[in-house]
Length: 336
Image (tube, rainbow, N blue to C red):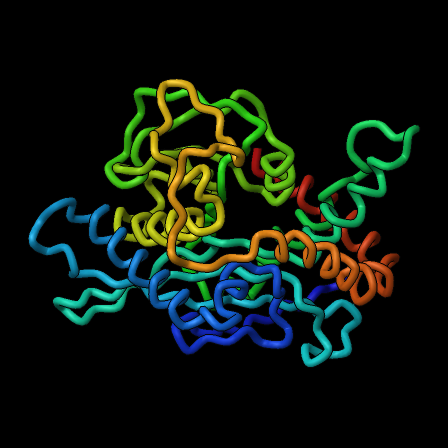
């Protein structure tokens, strides 16, 4: 079986950050760090994150500035042809949080995942899916949609590169789907807030399931809409409250910037809730974010993945993915 080699690079995401040439420019944090408003964008974003983590952890106490969140961009590349990691293809970018206790000086490792960006995901959603949908004779999703991406992600999580760098499984936090309805439950968590249940799986949920991730929906205290938390294992018990607070404060801040119609709405989700990007009753932040540009560039980066990854390594990747799926099924069967 072809052995894929993963490598990890890390870049601090702070007010001095400027996107690298290899960074997906549709990545949300990269979008914020460009243009004439970049410095104010970044400073305002980090202030919102720090204010929110202290609110989640301490409520209205006098210790409301104890914690700060630092963010690192984790870039994952993969070597397919065995020629070495210098020629590796960029694959995934995620964020890792680090919590700084300003009172004690302690630095606490947070959760990796948070924002999730993927070249192959761009290819699947911006190239493969539109082409399939344009075919009048086509039905449902393209054959094997998301399977290669899911196997690549699972292989990375089981790689030596991942285990040497991270101690816990990732949590990816995204917006809820505007095409689904959410129902409030009686289940509550001190940091994540009240849990909601979704009416049906979304396309994103199904795609992330192929990555081995399950999803739960929580609306944090003093929030107006639930967030989607994609995870392995036990979301509520595998992580500390402080780790969950760092992830929640980071991603809720980003969503207020990206989707203010949902996350900066003037009224909060009730017993039954359907998000809407056409909601007229919301407030914008002072942070400039080009949503139209992001959608347009996703197609360009899907083409990049097609040209530099999918086409050159098509047969190798298909063979590897099929063998990986068999091995994973055999391992799962042996454990059951």
